[in-house]
Length: 202
Ligand code: 5GP
Image 1 (cartoon, rainbow, N blue to C red):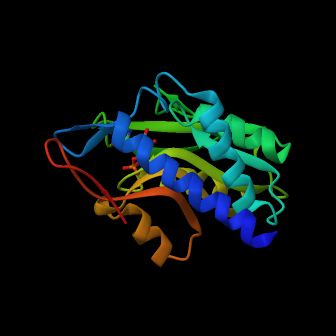
Image 2 (image 1 turned 90 degrees about the vertical axis):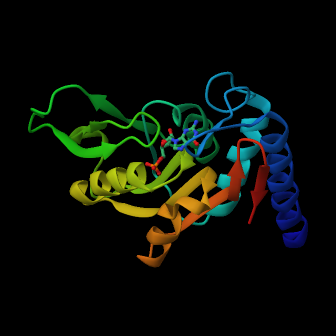
């Protein structure tokens, strides 16, 4: 039974790699567009299977809340939260740098937009008794995850780990965080990609 369970995980990761190769568009500057199934149009039945895999990976961890950052991680984070039967919270981008005392906040530099946003979560939605799973669509330099890690730490909650749909391994953010001791599970890890030369996985 255990072997079968693991086997489904491996098959799913292969399916995800195939889907990225088929539908992904590699842009100059190291950006991958997967808007046809992940973060613009969403293939919900397919994302539901990815959420099953996050559940399989973290089901023993006593998760009480799933946390992501606005906006493109919200879909997969919501599906994942449904599997665990827990709420999903997304850190909101705040235009104001003048954050009230009722919010936790972190500065996050956006890889895709090149700007820095303050992201905030109201204190009432994270507590010291929470065991948090971070979910995001992409992991590149690790800025978004570092911001979320700060929010969890400021709240005194327990960070269990992170589930990522697509990690761009060549940008190094994931391995830096793993070295620092964080558990990061990426369903697809890209070794290299080029606008004309295709996509290779680790
Ligand atoms: P990081 O903070 O790790 O550098 O980047 C992660 C965040 O940037 C994700 O939340 C994601 O929204 C966005 N991102 C980074 N790289 C890509 C990419 O290649 N394609 C897309 N669509 N989003 C990306």
